[in-house]
Amino acid sequence: MFLAGLFSGIVIFGLVILFVFPKLMFIVSESKYDMDKTAELITESVKEHNWSLPHQYDLQQILAGKGFEVKPVKVYSVCKPDIASRVLSESATQHISAIMPCRISIYENANGKTYISRMNAGLIARLLGGKAASAMVEAGQGSEDILKAVVK
Image (tube, rainbow, N blue to C red):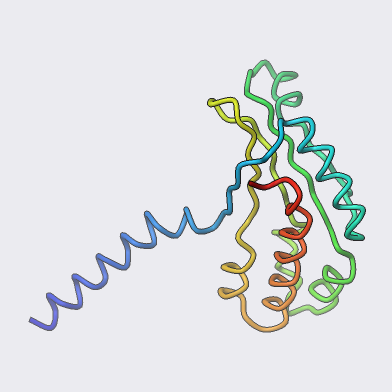
């Protein structure tokens, strides 16, 4: 009986990880505006919140150059140097650079509406713990503050 319960628990846990966790890793919000206006307002908001925007990727344009057609997708890499420096200044947390800087994706869905997607930094912070967690929470809140003007 114990083994059956243990096995059932493992299966249920596995199914939760398989089907629920991937949906929790990202936050998706509909924009109040079209693609261009959303991009413009986010760019302005990044500056207003004293973040930097070191890179912008127009994935529609990049893929068109390779012969693929997709709906509009822009990805912004946004950075708050004082938060990033806390993570990168210690050997124990430098591996987190793989998910830096924060990314904000703006895309037009098949329904013609504009959406904004970003990593759920709060969830990732819980998995990391320590100084990295506090930096992720702060970066996540900063990203949400940047997006307040455009999300529904």
